Amino acid sequence: MNITKHYRVLLASLFLLSGVACASSPVPEQPQPVTVKFWNGNKTASRQDYERDILAAALTATEQKFGASKIEESRTDYPLAEDEASVFRSKGFDIFGTVAGNQKLAQEQKILIPSPLMKGILGYRILIIRKADAQKFAALKTAAELKKLRMGIPSTWADAGLFRHNGYPVEEKGSFDDLFSRLENNEFDYVTFGANEVTGVFAERAAKSGKLIIEPSLLVYYPFPLVFYVNPQQPALAERVTAGLKAINTNGELDKIFNRYYGDLLGPLQLTTRTRITLENPILPKEMAGFKPGI
Image (tube, rainbow, N blue to C red; front, side):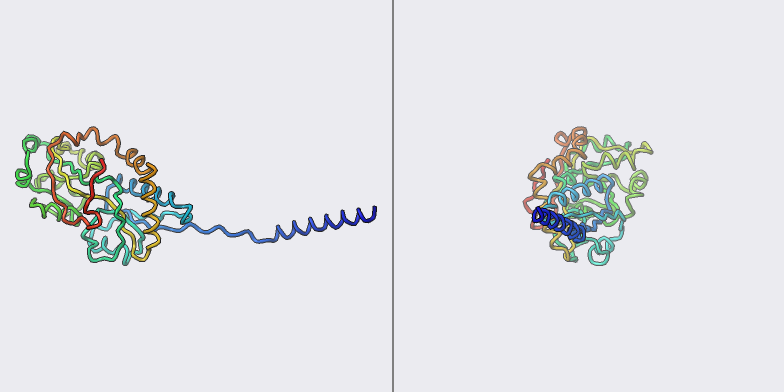
């Protein structure tokens, strides 16, 4: 009996000691999420929301391999070309979305991820015109006819050079904020926006005066894929986002996000029935030379 009692006391003591040891053992610290500094300025609000959702989905899809992350977003606009060009070099951002071949980045070090974010919809350009000119535009059928009119665009926007390359007169000055008042004042004849954004832009900025309309018969198309560029000091992030974009393309998540934002917009615009005028894109990077739209 004494031996049995001795063992019971010994076992109880060991149990207590193990509990103390466990209680005093440090709990392993959870790794902190990696912060991704995302510049998301110089674009419409709908594109800002869409691009953030795409980036978030790509990071989530790669969490198991690369770990947790959090997006630190800035929607600050940099209207000067030199400011946009320096978002990596002097402003310290890690990633941002823009059109492939953006010439403001031509002399900058960067990593291109050649995976289209928006199925090429930004290259399906719909015109906003003065209501008084509706019949004139309805009669246009050829590029030569459209080239007799002036296209307006804010300073430094990427497609100004593209239109010039194709022989179109371009009035490039001012900002997005004054674009439509300048159109109303006959400084130029039309502006163009991607099919993904024209409806929202018109409602938010152009409809109020009643003097402008979305032109219903013409479509200007050029290959204009939207992509992510990554800070050259962040190759691991480029690897991660590349893998993430591939994953959400494969599993259908990118399609779901695209349809959530733009699925209801494309039908009313009747892209397939419009008179189509096609432009060449001289700034398309060689990595995307075979790009085809996905809509």
